[in-house]
Image 1 (tube, rainbow over the protein chains, first blue to last red):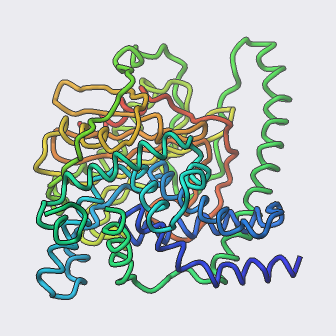
Image 2 (cartoon, rainbow over the protein chains, first blue to last red; image 1 turned 180 degrees about the vertical axis):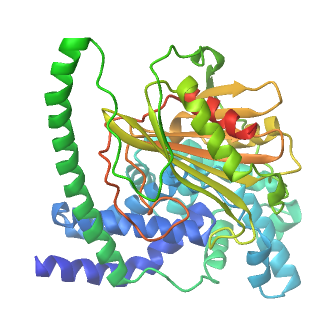
Length: 172
Length: 288
């Protein structure tokens, strides 16, 4: 029992910051991300003894966090918040060109539905395969492929050509 | 494009704020959750046993369910027990459809959110719900738990909100009904509803009611579950309601408070109100 508690604590200490980053990229809001990670880690504590394959605990926790973010809109007293409010803009250092690009990109990402954003985050931030992403989201590989394609296409549509050329995403 | 995305993700998390959750707080939350689940199972089991013992003889003798048993008195709760009068045809006013969101990217919703003066008056809104409850949800007991105006909260700084929370139940146990009401001015209610519906990646089942004043209420299948129902009400007057009905009684951990206080009421196995009833109660609040 005490060993389990120690192992849980070691895992949380090592992975909580990364899990919160993943939650933030899917939700677009640090408050929501922190809440989702707290919720997921509490559930993980309860389920810790039931996870037999400890090598997969990271994937298990990540799945719980992603689902907590996607379930966030089911909870009372929560609603998606515009992450591009004045508070966030004010925290960005004044590097005019970079800031402009960054805001464009963030807005393009924010325009995607959360589920599609989750697919992109798992594929391109976490580096998961199509199969691993499907397992994490509890959907088919076909859904992951189609959501990835639609997400990338939507991002391309929303970004100006000069940005894509500059960053090598399309030929000039 | 994949490389651009990787760069974007790395840049987005570069300015992360300090963590509030610690290893200690995560473990403590886990212990609380485990204890709560054990308590819930015990309470639900006991409630089911009591309901079975009391309901069977009562039904056998009168043919009607027993009257709801009121909760222990808290801080002067307002209660009303509704008579078992026929329900108006609320269900027929809700339109059901299978909605597939637009494939074009969703634009930002540009609304003004700072004017709290247009929000419903908390006293009048609470009283209106209590008065309408017997008509809209006959047989259900409503207990007012929270009716507050919040000028600013930690998550929504300088964004006014109205909080209305009721425990709602009967002999089968209690759930709660929560209204989170906030200003969204500058975009017509049907457009705000459309924006909400288009925020999905896949097709969903939708229940929708369009009110005569231009307000719109929607329930999306992916935002509700067996023990929770969510309804958004987009008021023509320029505010939205995020409404939840749950199968557990209210505790202070849900809502504007942060210190959890367990409820003394028994939970239910299902949500105490239908989507149509929730939409009708939202309209009562909007016109209070």
